Every structure is written in structure tokens, then in C-alpha cells.
Length: 399
Image 1 (cartoon, rainbow, N blue to C red):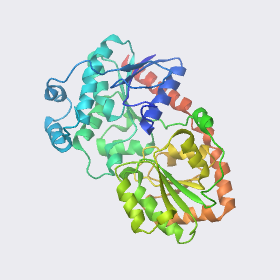
Image 2 (cartoon, rainbow, N blue to C red; image 1 turned 90 degrees about the vertical axis):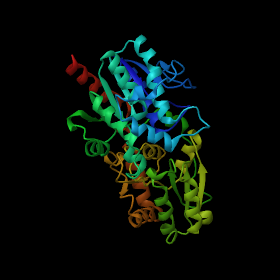
Image 3 (spheres, rainbow, N blue to C red; image 1 turned 120 degrees about the vertical axis):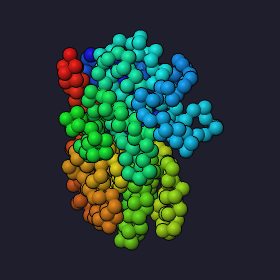
Image 4 (cartoon, one colour; image 1 turned 60 degrees about the vertical axis):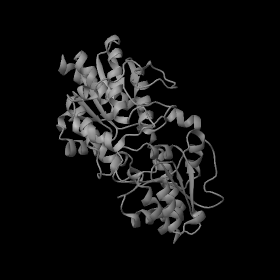
């Protein structure tokens, strides 16, 4: 089967969760005797085991309103421009999304394919364009919704509309978890029969290459770790609040936050107001061996996400033999059995569980062993095979 796959990013140009998921799915779908042509909006430095096509500089926008009118109300787009226009950049993000779809037309007409697979809203207009031109079936893959990114407040109407129309235009929708599937049904009105769940996996080979041996703790002190974008969706403010509570009972503990994002300054100021001082450290954005070393140093990894469609970082932590505490408002909580779980807002319960792990070696070791033994079931090979099964069902029904 030949797959035309639209994405927005791939490592190492961008090592975020979306790019990592897209790369591993495309690679493993290719390994299952399929041909994947992965399309990106611009020419960037990537390393891939499958053909990567670039859709940039094919055609400039002439009349954006003429193009977008079949998909969303132009009033939403005009309002978006008022709020997001920036004279320092040639185009806004939304304009880049439409430009991507326009530029992709040349690739669509000269690349043979049987099915279209588009990842998240940034790629949906390109996927819809491909379907309209060729009549080939479209798969819309949802890695995160606007409700996840905004915590349900301040939803961008233009982005929401692209998500909704993309899923409506698709022959089948893939969600990364049951948690995400329910959001799609509730907030977008998509027929439940149209949605398949394919959980993300773990690149065990990559993590093995980057694994490092390191002593637990930081300067002999027990360490609690947060890794991710410092933004509303990831719950970094709850991590600060839980740190204050834990330090009342384990005063020698150190809390480390690795990442960057729009809430970084706010979190730094909140940590200062709480008087956390040298007990709360910011490591910045890390990847590769540096990140693996940080996981290995931690006594427990905490993911207090407000709304997490899946969440690969807990699996990365488990690969380094580190116990995890994850919010129940996440897709990964559906599939990890040997993990501590709380609601993201329940800071007291979160603190109690962290204290228990830091104080009781037996609990730490039990979680460490049992959760690590779960890792083989988190496979990108399995995820890829499930995607191929979705392709086959759609192709059969479209024949």
C-alpha cells in the first residue's frame, strides 16, 4: 500500500511528541511492507528511513479567502489575523497551514498513493486538498485537540473549525487514546463508529542507545522530576504547589523542571513566592543522553497534565527504571498498570504518593521493577500495525 502522509514536524528539526510519533509510525508502517511518502511544509534537516517530500515554495497565496471558504467561515480567519498578526513574520501560523495545503497540490498530482494520512490540524487542510483532488480516502490522526492545548478555556475558533472539518471530511479518525476519543465525540460531534484508538508506543532501541548509568538523586538528595513544555496543558503550576507540600515532610528533596514554554516566567515567580529556593531547579530544554541521565537521577517522575491525549514522557522515564506518578487526565494512564495515579488538581494526594515513594525504599523498588517489565507492550510496531488495519478497513469499504 502507498501512503501519502502529511505532518508538520520530524526529528531532529523538532523533537516534540508529535514529530517523534509521526516518525516512528511512518518508519514502522514502512517496515510492514508499505510505501510511505512523508510530506513536510518546508525543507528542513531531517533523517528518515522513508521518502520525505517538501511542499514549500510551490505557489504563493493569492486570495486566501477564496481558498478557505469551502472549509471554515472567513470571519473566524479574519478575527484570527487581528489577534495573531505579527509584522516580523512573513505569514501567521494559520496562513502557513493554508499555504502548506496550496503548495501540496503539486506533490499530490505527481505522487502515486492509495490512501492519505494527515496528522493533527496543521496538516488537515493539506489532507482535505489531497482527497478532493484524487478521491482517495483520508485518515485524520488526532494527537491533541484544541481543548487539550487550552485546558478548555480560550479555545481558538479557527483552529477548532479546522479540526472539526478535518475529522468530518475524513473516512476514519485515529485517536491516540480513549481519553481523546471521548473528547472528539463530546466536543466535535463525530460518530463514535468512525473513531479508532491507536495508543502511542516507545522507541526502545533509541532509548537503549541513549541510556546512561547514574546515581539516583542530586548531590545525595532525593529528586522529583517534571519534563515537558511549561505550559497550561502540562500542569507545571501544580508541580510547584506539590513541591511546597512535599518539602514540609521531606525537606531534603529537590524538584527539577526540564523544559521551556509560555508559563516559564510565571512558574519561576511562583516557585520564588513559595520560598522553594534551591529546592526547585530549572534545567531548560534537554534531549538525548542529557534527558536520559535526568530520568535516571530521579526517584520519581511526575506528569501532572491537565489534559494529556497520551503522554510519552512517562514511558521514557520507565525505560530508565524510574517510577512514575501520572494524572488520570491522560491517555497513557489507560495503559500503564504499575504507575501511581491522581487527578491533576488533587495536589494533596499527589504529595502523599510522592512522599511515600521518597520515604519507602520497598515501594520505590516494587514500582521500579513492575513498571519496567510493562515496557515491551508499548511498541510502535503494534501501533503501526493497527494503523495499517485501519487503512485496510477503509480501503475495503471505499472499494
